[in-house]
Length: 467
Image (cartoon, rainbow, N blue to C red; front, side, top):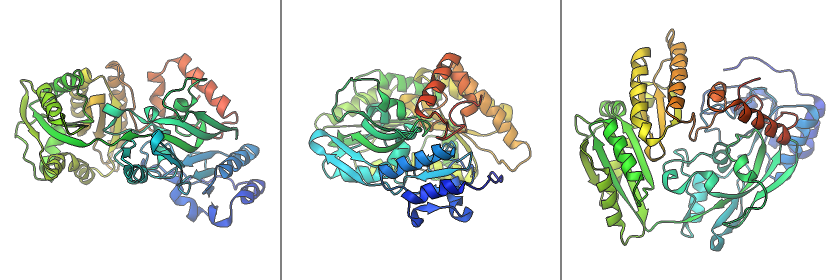
């Protein structure tokens, strides 16, 4: 937690804000602003002011005021991110988009919905479901996280293995650059190649280039049915071999989740489990589509999942059985919270064939640093959530965890992986980014940042190593 205090905001700046925001939409008292200094990373920096725009025009006015007075601006949605990307490092102004939560247009016939950034993922799902659609990105925090946050991080979830990330499921955006310029980028159609693809550039940029004020989301018809399987293996190698086999045949699962042996042992300690005693890894597999032929599709997935290391595979036939099969996976997060409330959770990605090498390397690092490491995640993408269970209040634990994390990132890059699949960079991985990106790429990205945000007011000192 940061305890430093910033100098008072200039009166001229507060007067500019007051021209566009009524008193109840503008906070300046430290006790009122305190909550908006956090996100789910548990980092905290106190903002000097918070505004709650309800219109695109108010966002424009806030950005222009910050430029005029050289005030840092940090945008946030619901604060569910885990990397510190919405923590206001420089104090300044926090623009909270939670009240921009309206549906602008819903066009079922054209399969899109245009929404403001403060609406939650679940609210969108509920609205479009009534017309037989869904929006594929489904992060675990869907009930709470905002669409704006999903786009800022390019957060996906289990369904990305079949349906892609937000970048593949957004048609266009309305946004305000760091210079206060208004943009409309993208299309309302399923095809369009005019100009550079600024939509995909802004998505995943973590509020460093522009503030999204509207998003046109590409919708997908709801499947008629879904079938769920659970496969248990005697080793991570056998499970990874199954993942490669599953992903190399025509029936693409809509979810392919992985739990390693350490996680299985954790589940046994904190919940009832019917898993075999020698279980070394587990896959949860789902397939969706038309009812006709879905049983055959599930059989093909089951056949692909079979190898010499398979201990057990089950296909759920009823909703109750589906719930029972997923109980193992759902028991994991509560168990981790009980063991280590302040755990470190990173979301690295490696090619699926490198999952065994990653898990083996993580086990070695766990032994080296005497830190328990629990792994689970989205196996079809090779996106593994690595959980370091530590007590940061214990002497030396935080330092050990930092050195361990350093080696974890080196391991991931050695395996041709990437440092983040969906959690983003923010502050947590900022200082490691130059290991993955070459100097020329970083220089070009800094140039892009200056074009969008010439005064450097948007989310300063995030995403890239400090220079």
